[in-house]
Length: 67
Image (cartoon, rainbow, N blue to C red):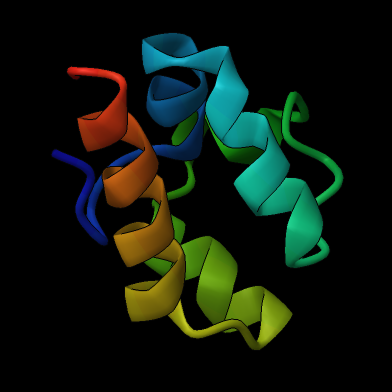
Protein backbone atom coordinates (compact mmCIF):
# COMPACT_ATOMS: atom_id res chain seq x y z
CA UNK A 1 0.00 0.00 0.00
CA UNK A 2 1.28 3.44 -0.96
CA UNK A 3 1.20 6.20 1.67
CA UNK A 4 2.21 9.86 1.86
CA UNK A 5 5.60 8.70 3.14
CA UNK A 6 6.29 6.42 0.18
CA UNK A 7 9.21 7.54 -1.98
CA UNK A 8 8.17 8.21 -5.58
CA UNK A 9 10.84 6.00 -7.14
CA UNK A 10 9.71 3.11 -4.90
CA UNK A 11 6.18 3.42 -6.31
CA UNK A 12 7.53 3.42 -9.87
CA UNK A 13 9.72 0.38 -9.14
CA UNK A 14 6.74 -1.42 -7.59
CA UNK A 15 4.74 -0.99 -10.80
CA UNK A 16 5.90 1.15 -13.73
CA UNK A 17 2.25 1.59 -14.74
CA UNK A 18 1.87 4.04 -11.84
CA UNK A 19 3.86 6.59 -13.82
CA UNK A 20 0.69 7.71 -15.59
CA UNK A 21 -0.83 8.95 -12.32
CA UNK A 22 2.14 11.21 -11.64
CA UNK A 23 2.24 12.48 -15.22
CA UNK A 24 -1.48 13.23 -15.15
CA UNK A 25 -0.99 15.68 -12.27
CA UNK A 26 2.00 17.40 -13.81
CA UNK A 27 4.88 15.50 -12.21
CA UNK A 28 7.05 14.96 -15.26
CA UNK A 29 10.50 14.59 -13.71
CA UNK A 30 9.94 11.13 -12.30
CA UNK A 31 13.42 9.78 -12.83
CA UNK A 32 15.26 12.88 -11.62
CA UNK A 33 17.28 12.83 -8.37
CA UNK A 34 14.41 14.39 -6.43
CA UNK A 35 12.16 11.43 -7.17
CA UNK A 36 14.75 9.11 -5.64
CA UNK A 37 14.44 10.76 -2.26
CA UNK A 38 11.16 12.64 -2.27
CA UNK A 39 8.00 11.30 -0.70
CA UNK A 40 4.66 11.57 -2.46
CA UNK A 41 3.56 14.10 0.15
CA UNK A 42 6.64 16.30 -0.42
CA UNK A 43 6.22 16.24 -4.19
CA UNK A 44 2.52 17.03 -3.93
CA UNK A 45 3.24 20.01 -1.70
CA UNK A 46 5.74 21.39 -4.23
CA UNK A 47 3.33 20.87 -7.11
CA UNK A 48 0.18 21.98 -5.31
CA UNK A 49 -1.50 18.61 -5.71
CA UNK A 50 -3.93 16.80 -3.40
CA UNK A 51 -1.75 13.98 -2.05
CA UNK A 52 -4.71 12.04 -0.66
CA UNK A 53 -6.41 11.86 -4.07
CA UNK A 54 -3.21 10.84 -5.86
CA UNK A 55 -2.52 8.12 -3.28
CA UNK A 56 -6.10 6.89 -3.49
CA UNK A 57 -5.88 6.60 -7.28
CA UNK A 58 -2.53 4.80 -7.17
CA UNK A 59 -3.70 2.35 -4.49
CA UNK A 60 -6.89 1.58 -6.42
CA UNK A 61 -4.79 0.84 -9.48
CA UNK A 62 -2.35 -1.34 -7.52
CA UNK A 63 -5.18 -3.23 -5.79
CA UNK A 64 -6.81 -3.93 -9.14
CA UNK A 65 -3.56 -5.53 -10.29
CA UNK A 66 -3.23 -7.64 -7.16
CA UNK A 67 -0.37 -5.72 -5.53
